[in-house]
Length: 139
Image (cartoon, rainbow, N blue to C red; front, side, top):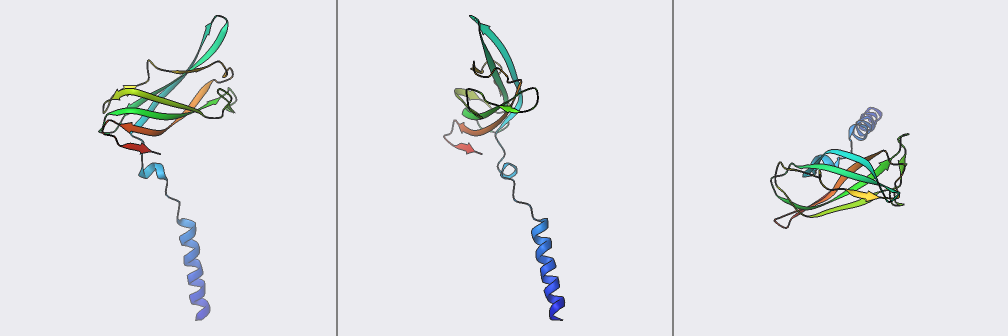
């Protein structure tokens, strides 16, 4: 009898541990800015080529956004991560803005670098958002 109870307890513990997934913080704390697209382009000025990185976002919150931070990672044609300005993750900051609920932003702004020649596309993530009421969302 004791062995049967022990087996049941061990089996229950195994199933509980095996079936439990850690809580995904992004599900419980979604970003108020939705990334709706990105763009990488090149421009040559005076013989120097620079890459331009654009991140298009939509305010999906009910508040006006006045600033945000975004992480930008570059990738080459082989889907390998490459550096931008000698770092793995470019830290972008957008401020002095007013993105109202449901509005989009980013079509006239960009980050640029002359040290990103092999970047073909970018992956981005919103990491912090500041609202006009003084509150802040942090990933």
